[in-house]
Image 1 (cartoon, helix red, strand yellow):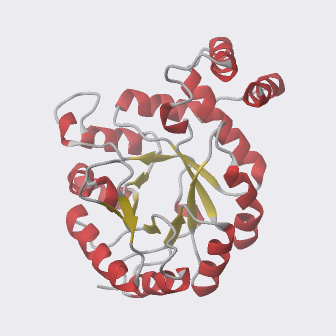
Image 2: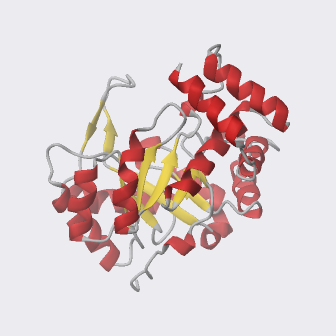
Length: 286
């Protein structure tokens, strides 16, 4: 295998597609067919596709990509492993060099590809120094198995230590109206030239599902005026904040629906006025 060419920020679209919930259930459904979702995303300009070993659906993602593999920036993650109990809180982290080497082979086989464009450490480890993890990831890059290195669920100190070993292309962290911790990362990301991939911009659905509070009411009022949905307004807020941040920010909403995908793409074009932004900030603070 020849060494993969370097991944750059120019490879990225303005919005990505999270595939965490992609499943076999959608095949043949006009709205939820996995391959149809991928094609619709590409046609809409959303060419960054994100999955993970932990999600258990890399084979489905690989089937859905099919002949469109070379049209997308394909991302996956390693390092988080479910326990045997089936509980949502039963998971552990393995980020040692041996796991790095075995995890990539499994992901490439399941996805049926010869390299990944962006490979993330899914979660920081308290047991393995991040320098060791990133050193092993850099070996994958040298071998042509990945084009770029990413980190997820880390600290600013982790980012600096990792970047000193090998350039980090992207950091994936949650950013939404109600999850703002990542804003403290932005000066470091700008300094080091690292993209922020903002996952869960709708707060895992909590911003728009079964809420009756000040923020839900503000989202509904703005959405009504803009002839949009509350979810689109919440996503448009992340796009707006990203543009103001000075960093390269790629919101990463997840969906298995072509209809929702198109709504998410449209949200990127919504312009929020100062009154809208103030209303949202006041609602969050209340």
